[in-house]
Image (cartoon, rainbow, N blue to C red):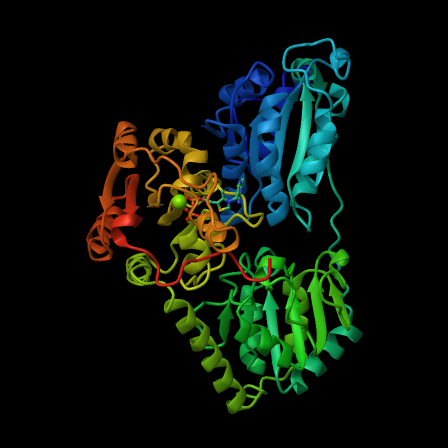
Length: 557
Ligand SMILES: Cc1ncc(C[n+]2csc(CCOP(=O)(O)OP(=O)(O)O)c2C)c(N)n1
Ligand SMILES: [Mg+2]
């Protein structure tokens, strides 16, 4: 157990705020993100006195949760955000929804008015109507610490619940009077189940089906990554010679330059048809979101085997014939044990050639749409290290090439808002860089999304994070512009004023440059990556020119 300066007093007592720091520290938490307020001051002060946890001050509560979320995604550890009561907690909601969407283990600790005033409507400072219900609606679950006596148990429960598969954000309200109240220390020992009972009958059946399949296909999502099952997915794919389709958040489960990797292309017609032609589909920890399946218009026609830690995934979007519930790594390894390694894949060379051709076809189809952005993408990929983390906001360069063509090679190096909310990229890049200071972290954002949390440039500067931020500026909401042009023939709410981003970044002491052509991009980007200090590269999309084919959102949604 880590020990800060925040130790239990000689009488075995500490305040609840001190207990919070103690439990976080004991759970291995080294960084928390938050915005200070009168309703969390005791916790902030306990963090300062303890000295073992780094406090990153965010400029908004939503951004703090995004930082904790991305920190969790790239490290696999618990992310922690601390907010205030009322508006502070409310500001966190959109980002909690995102963390829920991504199944990210985030602990959100928030203040609450003093216990006698909860729900009274008396107007106690920061009082809001029913904060707990709001938090419950956005998180995996939400708790209220009604008395100091339950502090140790409730803190442990909240941490466990966030981390326990299926992981997700958990909110914990601590009323301001409870934060300062004294609580006794409790040593907690938790029984851990050590014996894993594998459902061998179903595992053998799955192995049998996969081994004899002529056209097997693996469809992997974030669940495979969070279970650290990437190597098992790849090994199985290679043993049977099956292509791997991934969801957006499952990217990196197999290197995207692998000849069996189809990748995040399931909403392309050619891939949809190929999925329909598979005789056995094994899906692993994937949600099959509408925008990643062209609105579910392509069917799974073969035998469908599912693996997921959440039993509620059974038949959720595509009907299953066989479902294995549990840890993906354990289950995949058990299946692998049942398929002898014959030294060559079980599928035919013809099938594997077909897979390679499909892989190349959809990549070519997408490349053909990009115009000048093709070389910008290739430059970025060539200059960034293989294990660089690419964080993407919801912007055309992400939705077109960043989330599909730009190759991801390593698990936990691709971060994108699963729920599709703009603006979360910058704070996510901050959390990712803090979680992995050893890695290059690059951000792709649009002007619209970037302005949502532009205040976090101050956090980038203050924490001296060597982020490489690539901002694609088209003075507006480009994707909605294109959709409006096509569907309605008029534009509304999409043409926006852009600030002088270069001057704005420089005012924070951040290096910045504007790029006006695809050719000029390479040298500036190279410098930005080599710099190892914060860098904002602004791509003037009017000067660079349009894509060959305008992007109008994913098909089928
Ligand atoms: C929180 C939130 N609000 C609104 C939207 C709708 N939306 C999707 S993309 C987009 C435009 C983003 O603009 P920008 O970041 O400049 O990217 P561009 O489309 O111009 O490439 C908007 C408003 C959203 N996805 N999330
Ligand atoms: Mg834009």
